[in-house]
Structures are given as C-alpha cells and as structure tokens.
Length: 240
Image 1: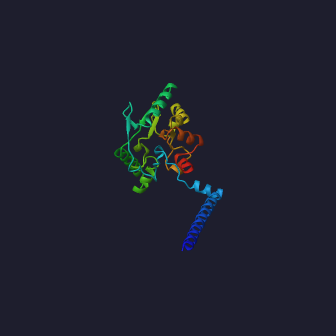
Image 2: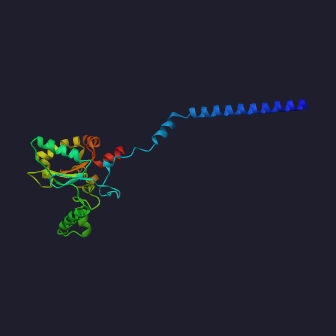
Image 3: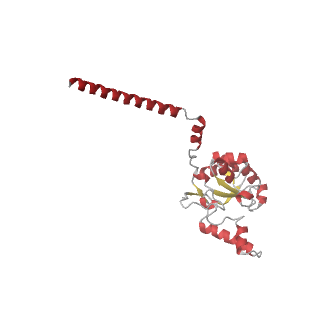
C-alpha cells in the first residue's frame, strides 16, 4: 500500500513538472514572436496614431464651413469701439503700435460682428447686385464673393480685423498700394496674423482679393503660412 502511494506521488509530481515546463516554453515562444514583429509593421502602427488636436485658433470658417455651434466669443474692446477676441488683442495692439512707430497710420475699420450685423452687410451687397438685374440666387452668389454669408464670416469669430490707411479708407485693391498696407502684408505674421484672402487664392477661398482683411492664427502658424505663400485652407490640408 505504501509502495502504491509512493508511486502515485511520484507520478503526480512528474506530471506537475511537465506542465510547468510546458508553460515556461509557451511563455518563451510568445515573447520571441513579439520581438520578431517586422519593423515596417511597427512603423505602420505608429503612423496610425491619431494626429494631435488642432489649435482652436485655426478653426476654418469659409463658404463650406460655418462657425461651430459651441464657439465662444470672449472680446476685448478697442479704443475706437471695435472689439476682438482677447487671445488676439495683445498681438494686435503690438502690431498697431509698431506700425505707428514707423510713422504709419493704420486704422481698424471693422472687427467683431454680430450675426445681425453680418446679415445686414450681406443683404446690402445682395441688393446692389439685384439692381444689376441679377436673380436672387445669382445676386447672393455674387455677393458672397465679397461679403461672407451670415454664419460663415471670420469677423463673427472675433479673430478677424479689417485694417486700412487712415488717409485712404477704401475697401478696394487700391488699399494694397498704401504704405500702411505694404508694411502690414510684410510684417503681420510676426504678430500672429495672416493676410486671409490673397490675390492668387480666389479659386480656393472663393473670396475676392482683400488687402485689408487679417485673420489671427497665432505666431507659429502665421509664420509658416506667410513664408510658404499659402492660404489657411492649404495650410490645414498640408499639415492637419
């Protein structure tokens, strides 16, 4: 009886030993498989990681993109009664101060607009085209090339300003020839602003050339956009 019990214990211990050995071999093979994953597979997994969250200052608002429903406007009032997003205010103030230090006289003629204000401006532009015998639909299409439809204007975001020369307050291409505008176009990126609607980007922006309309995107983004000679839409397509 004692011999049978002893034999049974030996068999049990042997079986346990075999199981433990098999488990160790399994763990070893598993680790080996993980370590031999091809480098290109690892790269693929890394490239599939989500891109970093886009800066809110780059929010695209244009003929295809309305202002987000959750967009919050936190304004600072300027000396002339205009207002701008508080994030853009310090750089805007510095840009204006530096321009004046160069003997220039820039004037902010438009900045933040309410929905009602934008609607009024758009309606007025539509009416001017209707007087030219355009249909309602055609008039609105033509008007939107110069005045954004309500809900699609950067002015409603609080991040856009229209700046003209004090001595030449005309919103047409002649504005480009003023000393104020030439300085702004060359230097605005240093303060986080971009010329939003360049003359050679009409087919992309669907907005006419406005050498007075500046959009705040932050210094880092503005530098790349201006140095590469691209518009905001192109920048977002390329980098985001």
